[in-house]
Length: 173
Image (cartoon, helix red, strand yellow):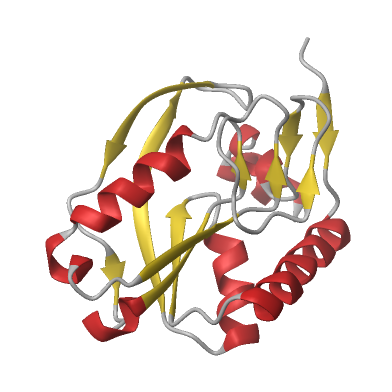
């Protein structure tokens, strides 16, 4: 069984805050772009801290049915989901929860640079994540935790993937 790193919610929030502090010192993004699903809670917090518009790229990269699914081929959605204006994409902070192999972040940069509605507005793209695994070939611009190994990271909301709505309803009776 693969080693697991279990993250508690307060640790998670503290790590996002550390990420925000580091970004604020070195980069002034004009839009936050999250890679879904992992970046959703991070982008929510960062958008409240920085008061910036958000955008989301939906990518399917894991296959299987359990918590420890393996990364497969990347499939990008056709469009970005955002109400940000095109000119907001001048300085992009591209966010994911972690750099596992680095493939998702790397390919997302390429995808953004070729995405017609905003590509001509982009002057700078920087990357951010909460964790970088040892074997990742990608070095994010901002990453508060660089791991010495490659554990499965169990994030605070991940247990919901193993629960049915009926189990949740029963627990909350």
